[in-house]
Figure 1 (cartoon, rainbow, N blue to C red):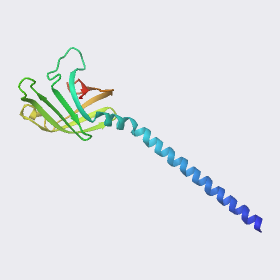
Figure 2: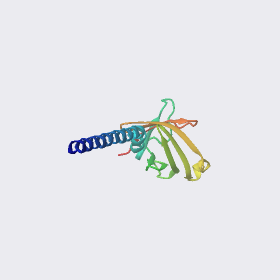
Figure 3: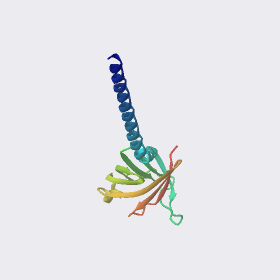
Figure 4: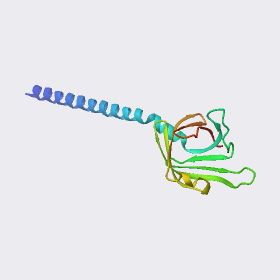
Length: 153
């Protein structure tokens, strides 16, 4: 009788251990899959946060105004672009709002602006973006803003 009780409890222990091992495997796999799905957008989103200075256009044929004096800031939810005349210090334009990032597609919603860009309020603009080291390349999707920015230091 002692032997059969011992045998039954050993089987029960092994069954519990086996079920526990399967549960750990499933939870680990689910966690790793979720982590892989979030990896790129999270990394890009985190890399976007900070201050950027306009250095040029994505196509070499155009020369945007504000090279070196236009600044763009991202916080994780909000963005702002501002440009001042480097000689006088007067604000040429200033606008901002909220943004969302899905994979490499950035969508900026304009919530506020000064008088020179007020017509853009309540508009949204899409961009394909890429960040390599301290360089942000933004290509307008349905808009003309194809710009290259470097992280402000």
